[in-house]
Every structure is written in C-alpha cells, then in structure tokens.
Image (cartoon, rainbow, N blue to C red; front, side, top):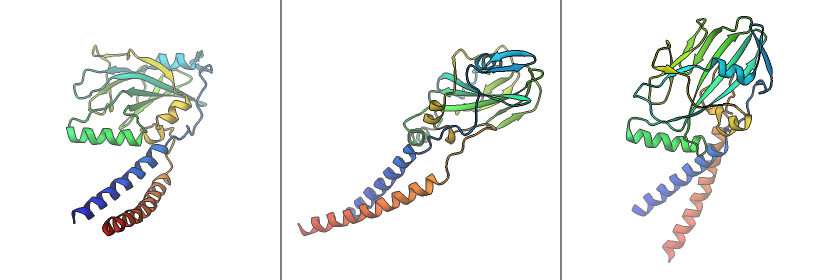
Length: 240
C-alpha cells in the first residue's frame, strides 16, 4: 500500500512539474498596443515635451507611511500613449517583492510568483493618468481597483495593503514624489516581466487563454506515459 502511495505521489509531482514548466515558458507576450518613442515630441497646452519630460512632470506623489505594506520600491517604468485629444501615461511601480501577512500563504504566494512570472518575485502596480492635450490637466486616473474622473493638476496615491494596491488620496506632508529611477518601459522588459499576466489599465495585453488547456493536456499526456514507465519499473522490481 505504501509503495502505491509513493508511486501516486511521484506521479502527482511529475504532473505539477510539467505544468510548472509550461507556465514558466508561456506568458511572455509582446505589448499589443503602440506607445510613443522616448524621443517623441508631444504638445500639451501649446508646450512641446519629450516623452520622459511628460512622465517626470506628472509623476504621482505617493504616501509610503502605511505599515501594512512591505518590500522596497526599486524603480518606476512609464509608457506614453499619444491620442488625438488625450495623452495617457501608464506608470508601473516595481517592488522587489510582496509579503503576505500569513506565513503559509506568503510561502505559497512566493512559489506561485516564482513559477507564474518565471523566477521573478517582483510586484508591479500600475497607475494610469489621462491628460487633456489642450489644457494639460489630468481629466481621469485609474489604479487597480479605483477610477477617478475628477480634474486635477497632480495625483496622489496611498498604499493601504500588503500587496501595494493603490488608493487615491489628497496630497499632504506625508506624501512625496518617489525618489527612485524612472525608466521608459521597453518592450523587452514588458515581455520578460510577463505584463500580460499582471494588472493593467485601459490599454492591455492579454495572455493567451489557450495556453492553459494546452499545458494541462501536455502534462496529462506526459504523466500518462510516465505512469507506464512506473508500471514497467514496478513489474521489473517485483520480479527481482
């Protein structure tokens, strides 16, 4: 009986291993929408700006005082989408990791991140700003679970959860512009960080839903043949 349980357990580990390999390999989609080049010139309120100048000008303030979050903000990526009446800036705040307050769930979460995002434990949260090109005023903003349609000259964000999810807040002496490097979000980084599997704003790249049934099918097929190898080994072991 114990021998059979061991074989079933090994078979389960083999199946999960194949699924993990499938998840690691897939999900590296290229960005599916067009963004402005770094040297592009965009006109806001009759003033011309380069892409990075706009990103620096509208970079949100952040209140880091909450004790609920952990990890270190390493850098911020940005991308700019130039439309006829609006300029959309997407900021991606990259944290080195996220830590669930419950120990077991924290370990499970890190294992899942390690596999799902291909050996990458970083947590990435986005903030989207919609800027009216004629006035230079922010006319809308979006984070993972909140949308703001109020006009504003600047945006302030607070962090109120262990997984760094943003809320909108009013600027105060507790909020400030993050003192980290601001980088253009190159497509190579976008792909390697598997943004198709992370939170995104109005412009998003979708992960192929066909990856998952295909991975499961291959894992089941491989496990079926592995089962026969186990049986052959068991028969040979029994005869000896």
